[in-house]
Length: 161
Image 1 (cartoon, helix red, strand yellow):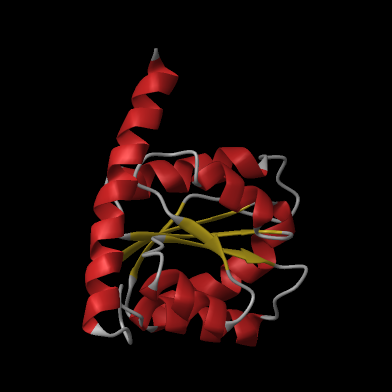
Image 2 (cartoon, rainbow, N blue to C red; image 1 turned 90 degrees about the vertical axis):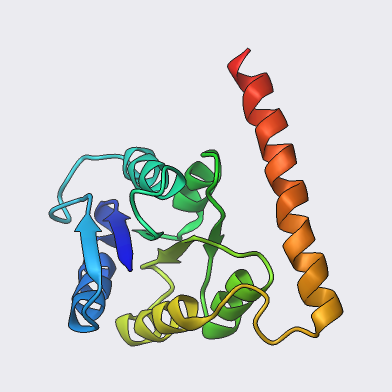
């Protein structure tokens, strides 16, 4: 699995902890920045870079870290094919995957300690879409992704015109 990883200066330290954890697990990590906590690169630039990689399937998933995780989430979700979720605990990570099929995880360094982030990341990486749901709900969730894709296509086409 290839993970695109990025942070702004407020998320740099947590990003580095997450990167080491991912690499220790043997996952391929593409770090798109920032390279230190004094960088002046804005959160929206990094979020867009990771989202583009995930949306174009150059990466299987993405992880973004800023101060709160919220700014990165907002920007990432503006890209086609990207379903970003801010997760501050493992339950949210599990639900973001099993219900919403999120492919970008956003974390906030202001709120999330490195050991908690590692647990969130592990849960998010190992939970499959529709996991743990009864067959009728699994079918409904699968169908919802088709409906969401149609809405996405309409919205992105209208935004281009």
